[in-house]
Length: 400
Length: 180
Image 1 (cartoon, helix red, strand yellow):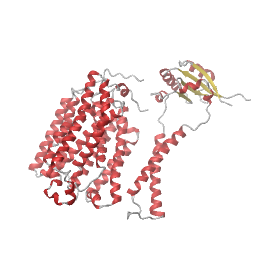
Image 2 (tube, chains in turn blue, brown):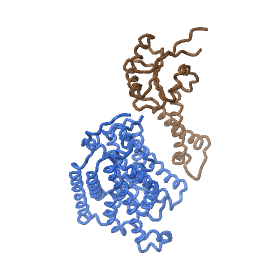
Image 3 (spheres, one colour):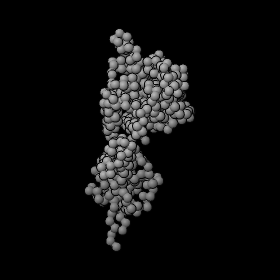
Image 4 (cartoon, chains in turn red, brown):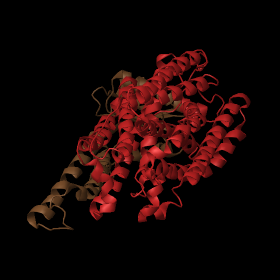
């Protein structure tokens, strides 16, 4: 067994955390101010504000969900390779409390976002039948439940893992493993319905049973890209130089590759059935995306979200060069954003792409807060679960 | 009966560390036709033996690419060219309908590339190998580690190679001969 000396390693983020958190907060405040100015003084309007807000909220929610999924699945399969990268995922998934607060504007803007809230919805035969599910009270109640589940799970895994840093108690690992299968089930249901509520119900006439899986695939892909970026950054700052090796980057790269393919598989499965069936009520969703200037965006999603990263990540070379992997990760995060944009926006802008500066400023507003809160939490505990019983396996891990 | 020809030397080791170090020395000595035999995979053995990256990934890629192209051609030829067949009003050459078969054949041919490529690169199946004539070698599947150096190696020398192998810390050295 390879012996890895980690005694000299810097495993703390506490010195950098205040700085990063403050800078990110500045970015966020700038984003918020710019968004308010664009909305109220430069004629953006509340409707557009909430539409851009929903896209960016859906984006950062997806990254948080992906991180939570990663934490849970590691315990389900009792993975050992991932121990050194798990803490960062635990920290990112702890952002659900922030996301819950950031959900309040969505509730405030519901009337601008969801036309099933229109008083005339009862006159629409199809909508009338769905109003038992799609109504304000039940919608809010469901989201209370989703955030309860997500924040609860994230807290459970984070606190137990941090507690183990001090006690080294193996029972904590066993406890997390015991509850992880149940967590997966809760996670799967809550994510599926949340994606229906948040993004699919923008067009309440349309439905796709695979929609939750599509959102899930993008979420997990995005969060892996986020991990790659964060570990590249930590390495650059001289953290975790011995613990997180090329082998761990390689594995994150492999998972990014896997979920690129999985995303395409799900995306195509959704498309093909509607294309084959060719029933107007089902194809309308794709029609909006094949009309006018949305067409090139759709083609870009096909090639940019699948073909390019597929070929880019196929070989082992980019997965084992952390600078190259960082580039691909940034690219994947950008394309994932376009994907969420493409899911939501065409329903409000049937005729073509209408980009607004609010799309960007709200990205900064939410993203800044998201990073700020995560950085602060990252500084509070060790960057690796330092007494995890599988830590030594993870340190010695090699792709043969 | 003619004199049996020499296959090479077989050295036995008792633990992982010794054989890893020994493998590094054999590598540094410049031998090329040699191998290690262990009951389980040893991390770092590839490096210790100085093995290059396998070309297998390229075979898999080639297989996948071939499967992808063949599947598209197959469906185009059957459905749109040789026997034009209209299905539910779709174009004869309609890519979305052809994707599932293309996907499956890409996977299948990639797997062929991996499976048959692995066999070919390892020169398998091999029904006979001189090493199996050694009684001692049977423990390679339970609790002993071995290095074999073939007589075909350009650096092989009956005396010098033996002297070199004796310095490696093995527990036994024997000559292996081809079975008649």
